[in-house]
Length: 280
Image (cartoon, rainbow, N blue to C red; front, top):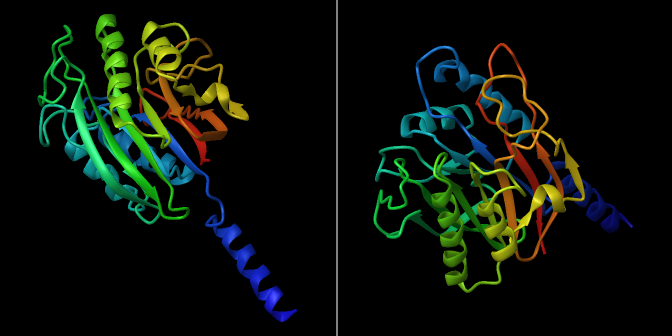
């Protein structure tokens, strides 16, 4: 009987610390590039953003627009995380599709980057009429809690050129097929395209076989809200341009557009989009 009680106490302790739960929370979050121009200067936004992340505790965050020094400053405020990425202009230059993750939970097995162009292996390439370089950073993670592996892809589609967005979605589908994998794939990003109302979305979901976690989740929170706030109170509407998509053996128990509205200081002009994932 004493042996049984010890096992039970151990199990309850694991449950209370979260270690017995093999689900994890991922975010898509456009950080808004760093600027010292007021209002909404980066030095003012940084502590608010760090407080939000430390409060909500996502396990993996796919970020967009972060500059090298900006990401380093954020990481100092959220020391529980490690981050990985490269600048879209090469090396430490330009904006990053940086991926923050909890290194005590996840291990990088493989990684790569490619650019959204006709020459995806050419650093900083852009061939579809878009002036800003656009790219994908991806990681093959191993979950130390379960020993299961999964891909986490992070991107940012062009904000002006619709053909570039459509070609970006086609290229991502092609690159995913080239993996020749049955492992789960999570694709997050700022797609600059309205969910269910843009061909880029249709290409990924209908042609590529991705699932929109906000629609497939057992529980969806704030799904009727925009994901871009423009540093103003978030509105209900159809402008859901930040997504967490999944493919393969994945279940989503909860998905949420995280509404953070504070007229004193918004952390970003986007709201984080969250999905709580369990790998089958």
